[in-house]
Length: 303
Image (cartoon, rainbow, N blue to C red; front, top):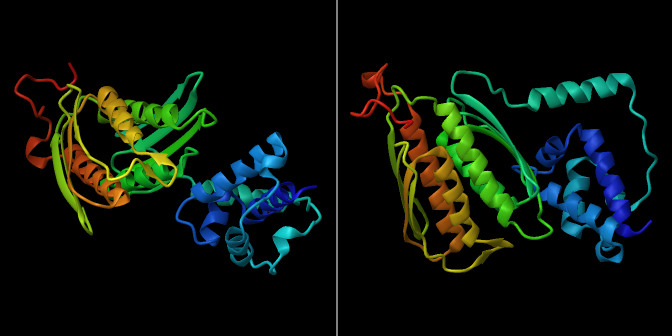
């Protein structure tokens, strides 16, 4: 058993002990599961490809896992017996996972499943949520940006994707935009009584972005972002354009995105997604003065 195989086996033991990958991530101080999901995926890929993944996890991640689960230093590097859970423990784990699930019920909820030869995606959303989210896309920086939409838009989001990441992130990012757009369109229904328009300016240190949108039933994207670098971490910033094109074309919205200034590419991206979340929140909110009325002189926003 090489180092990667040992780390993968012990990681699985910790997931079982915690009850779920998301709970393990929480105990180890992570905001979402992306980092641990990527680590697990690298180890699994290393097993499949042989020596390439034999190095295992880095020391900082090992230390976080051990500390988060109350294990002695070096626990991840030792062989441990595989415990056989008793039925009571299995039941407790199932209850814990059920409690972690986001509730998607209400008149403005939607779940869309989109499967192709390149991606298999499920998106669930609640427009009247509180900003809860769970993401498992295999693209950590995209998860971070999607979380901005959820938190600042007060939209509950649950997005999972199994994509052809062995090629690159393109299909995954674009298809998530498409599927999210389809779910948004479905949850909005005929759009009676909503504000329809939304706008937001969001700063982050030196960066400032403006997003203005219209749930018009007419797809259109004006996208003005000159990123100061092409790659953030391992994420190709060109893919943000593909994401928003997919979202706009399938939600049937008009969307104007302008990054007005910024030197840090991460800040540029984050202000755009925060501003989009806040503009979307404004646009989908019910307008008491428009209750029961269509916010359009032509009588429809769906044709």
